[in-house]
Each structure stands twice: as C-alpha cells, then as structure tokens.
Length: 271
Image 1 (cartoon, rainbow, N blue to C red):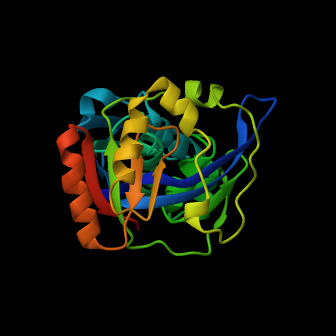
Image 2 (cartoon, rainbow, N blue to C red; image 1 turned 135 degrees about the vertical axis):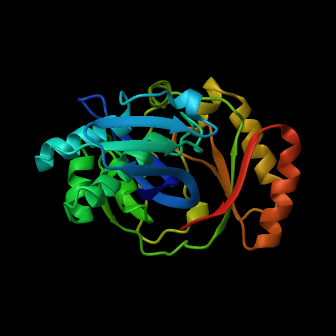
C-alpha cells in the first residue's frame, strides 16, 4: 500500500481580469497549500476502485465518478497501463469550499498512481495531463506556492516564501458552487498582481459575489478581522476564509475566539 497527501489549496489572492468567449475567465492568482488536507492510499488490484472515508465522505460520494476516477483513468490511458488500483480516500477537506479539495485529490491520484505503476513521470508531465482535469489541478500537482495566470493553469514560481506561516481556516458549513460566484462577478478589471507584491495589498475579486450568495461569508471575514491577523481573505469562490498570523500564540488565540461560532475551524500552517 502506498500513501499520498493531498494538501488543501488556498488562493492568497485572486484577481479576475476578463471573461473569455469560451466562458472561462482570465485571472491572476497566488496559490498556496496547507499542511492540512486529504489522504489517498492505493494498493495493487485488477481494476480501478475507490472507497471514500472520513468526515466529508458523504458529501464527496462513493465510486469512481469524480475527479479521482477521472484522474486515474486519464493516467492509465495516457501511459497505456493495464494495471488497476484499489484507492481509498480519507476526505477531510470540506466539499465546495474554495480549497480545491477535488483538484487536490485528483493531483494526489496522479502522483500516487505514478509511483504505484512505476511510471516515473516527472511532475511537469503529470501537470500537463492534469490540465485536462481542471484549471487548478496542475498547481495541485506541484502543491507549492506559485503564481497562476490564464485560467490559473499557467504557472510560475512566486518569489516570496510563505512556508511555515500560521494560518486559520474557517468554513461556515455552507457549500458554495463555483459557477454562480463567477457569474456574479461585476466584470470590472481592477488590475493584476505585480511580482513580489505584498499580500496584504491584494484581494479576491470573487468575495462580493460569494457574499451575495452566502452572506455568512461576510460574518466569517469580520470575525477573523477582529483577531490579531496579518491578513484575512476568502479562498477561491468560498465559502472558506482564512487568516494569516505572525506566530503560534496568535493562531491559538484566534482559533479559540472563532470556535464559539459553530463553524468548521482548522488551525494549520502553509507549506
């Protein structure tokens, strides 16, 4: 049995630039990843199968009709592999939460089966395959801080390290579908992200649309802003919000202060 970690994805900033004719959006974003996430295991088998366990198993659903299944089949087809795998996903990332849980799981599937099947593909080759599965799956293959343009699938290094930064993840237990949030964007281009820009000067252009759909997101952001955070922001299309802190004491104090709201709260660190 082999094991692969699927770290939760955060958008430290997300600037929308324009809606394209194909329905997608050109954007600029800074991807970062947490020490919290899902875990995927695989054992040799004749065919492909998936069992989902963990706190969000019911929301994720069982069987191969999801991004994990699509990733497994895509890799098998691309590599000409006849072997199978018995996959087990421990689902801890909330579903439809702006943390790229499905994308992280798909990326972990590619990395894991690459090892199980002895393919020895480099990450760049896996990322090229991942682009067919979703715009942020290539970033999740690498699972390191990077700058994304285009649909978010054109990646380059981000020059400022955030590794080890204490971060508090908070989700109000509301699932927010990505499509309606994108559709609610006011289509005003407020400018891109300069290389090395200070994170606190950036933004998430999807925040207002997400709050319109789920007003409780505004409550989460306000509660986090009352803590000793150095930055507060929504991730992706929501509903998860996060706050960055200078040290462990500030993280612990914020986690305790937020706990009374009945929201999902996860203290962790950036990778």
